[in-house]
Amino acid sequence: MSTPVLDLPESPSIWVAADAVDQARPRSRQRQLGASDLVCERRAAYIHHGWEPTDHVVSPAAMLGTYIHEGLTTAARKEFGWLVEKRVADATIRGSIDIVQLDRATARRLPRRLRPTVPADVNTLEDIKTRTIYRWDEVRRYGATAGELRQVMTYVRLLRTGGFADVDGQRVLARLGPIDIQRIRMRFISRDSGEEFIQEFPYDPEIAEEAVWWLERITETEHPEQAPRSFYGPGIDAQCDYCPFATACWGVPAPGRPVQANIVHNREDVAVHLADYVDAHKDWAEADRVKKFVRKAVDGTEAGTYGRNVLGWRGEDKEVEEPDVRAMIELFDDLQAPIPMVPDAERMVKALVTAGIAVPTRRVVKKGSRRIEVKAAPR
Ligand code: SF4
Image (cartoon, rainbow, N blue to C red; front, side, top):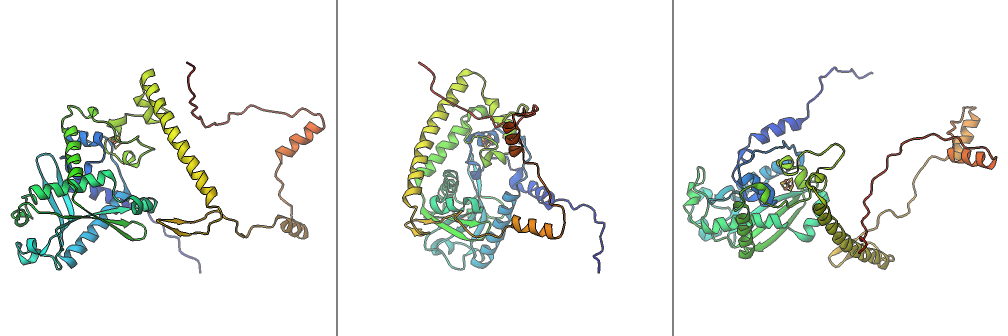
């Protein structure tokens, strides 16, 4: 029986709908600096100075992260009675904390409906982060990034000094006053497998202070361009690929040039960048020697766990099934089918040269990859 062919209209991408909903979220329309913006100084400065975004960014990966967040925090609220998505703010910065798990003494000061099912031993602030498989190894090895630490320490500082923000939906919480958060829990979730990785640490006033200082540098600028870029731009850092201020920050690229070329104006700029290149190359070359040495040193070692690392081998010899050309020629011969012939340019050139006949040529343009070469200038 043949399958009926349905004449369906082309289906729109479902991310179009997801993006429209995302844009309507209060968070997306928020123009005050948020704790989650403490990642790039330049971007924070655009927000602080009230600039309108120049780029409409659609990031399905980020939206997936939002959906996972919502599902997990809702479940934690219903099942564990944890406080979720609670707001904090001072005159400069605002934030929405994923989870606060109160201790017994603090929880007793709340109406029963707001108390956790199981109180924490100490007041705990939790932040959920999702990661793709590509960054999972990095999470397990190094935990939270510097920007994420600034974010959570800022939340804790705001809770320890002013408590929950006195806004609709959480006035009862605001009446608790300052909350003495003792523990921070970063809960990383793999976006691919759902695996959890938990990192816990106490409040660190030094990092919180550093975040305040970071913020002061932003608020002291008179123009966003006085704040340095914390990343190397689109095509290099994902933060820039999905930055709503990328065009304001880097401009529009000249035809055929990367956008980073916009910020090089004179010979001094080139000299500075080449010096960076040489420094980076020196570090890279040293690191590459270490990697090559280790690769040789463990050559005879079985795959497995050694200390904090897992050794694996990829690309080792293995048997695979592939078409047997000789057998196919015999088969084609038996079937008296024509055998496809591909001209072998290399053999033809060799034959003509051997016969002393000039090889005919034609001019073609070959697309080359333009490579940089930096050497020491003569003194
Ligand atoms: S494009 Fe990159 S460097 Fe520029 S503001 Fe955005 S994140 Fe920062």
